Length: 269
Image 1 (tube, rainbow, N blue to C red):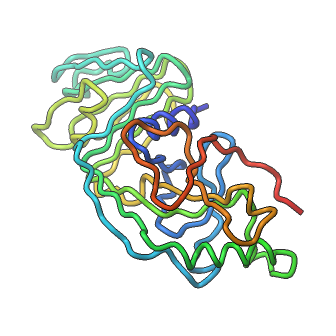
Image 2: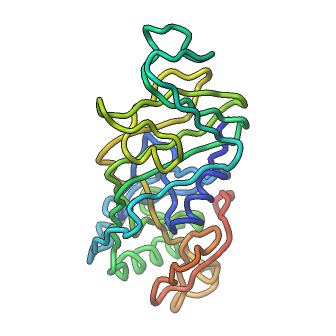
């Protein structure tokens, strides 16, 4: 089974944003959800549908590093094969295109890369916060579709990428073939090389995987109510959902940060 928590924590620690898992559910500013025990995003609604308000004042910033990449470490290895070279994975010369074969030595192994990430951030969230306060304190009198629970989060920033590739092993010893997306593109031999754009081919076992271009809503930052909301009406602080604060990432102005990795808990009565 794929180690989603390890993957999410590693990317967030390096780049200050959480990757969206499951890969089938890219998200947007204003989305409401919860986090599973493994760090996966569980959608609930949006602030627009639930409260008829949305984070606004959207600013776009292109990340200056160009390429984001990460892997689980020495348990991921790359090997390049020339055209016609066979292997245990590709045994027919006719099928043996120039490729890299990536081997995952652990069931918690992963590799990831993204290119030219643009971050969209909401600078105005006051109306959303006031709506959440009312929805939480008046939840006993509201229909389910209008309530707020302490394990809910709302997204205030998302990251879009020119290319986005991620592979998470489900079983130890899995090998997968990857080829360049263009006819003359480079064969990836490092995690960063995957950012050039690749096609994921045959694998020896099932993988949790994605490789796409124009990848919208693949990273996010989100706020969750801090515990003080349970005892006070005014002056409650919000904290961004974080694992470890990455070096060089300043706290968001006017909001206190929380540093625990959240786990799902039963809803309050």
